[in-house]
Image (cartoon, rainbow, N blue to C red; front, side, top):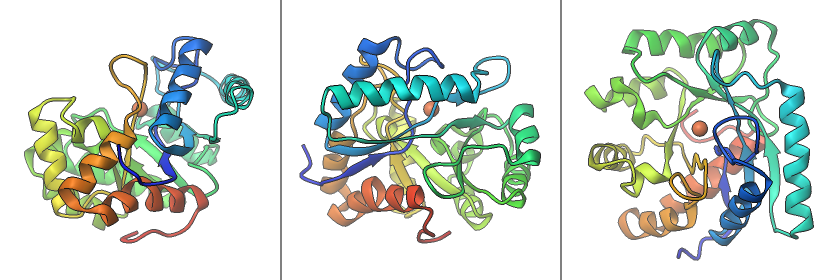
Length: 247
Ligand SMILES: [Fe+2]
């Protein structure tokens, strides 16, 4: 395991009863413990908000988030917890952008935005422009799943130039999502196009918290400073509302 300290996970689904993440309190606690075992000290919990699929209200999320906070406190886990959302780019998000009734990551103005994956380049750029013009910085969730990036990895340069930050999943880097995803994330890392790595953990068996393992892998392949930047410094800056490199 990596000796890097204070890893930060700013995209995961550890709150029970709000989406397809943790099943119940028991699994939620198990996942929090695993995060801590992996060297994570700060977590931003990001339940899905997606039309016709996950429409849990802010009040419900807040209530369940308080439950998770007490689970962590009672278990004396060394974790600082924040709560935000993973916003699917759909009619609900477009409506909320108009009223600015949104919950950015931590204390800043960065929104975790998920695309369906099949949008073409023009559709993605238009969406990012809408988010930016509403006063938010978009952080594209697991960008390696977007078809437009698969067809042309260099499109990531355009996404960055359009003001988007790019998040990739630790599982993709570690090969859990197949060879294509692994090779694509390696290319994005080699070209220094990735802003931040997160777990996107959902459960204790398949999509699990493994940022510590990912840190070790990155240290071996790309060096310690990149691992520290993508797993600790950049996510900390985002949560604190600071401008980060390339923004
Ligand atoms: Fe997610």
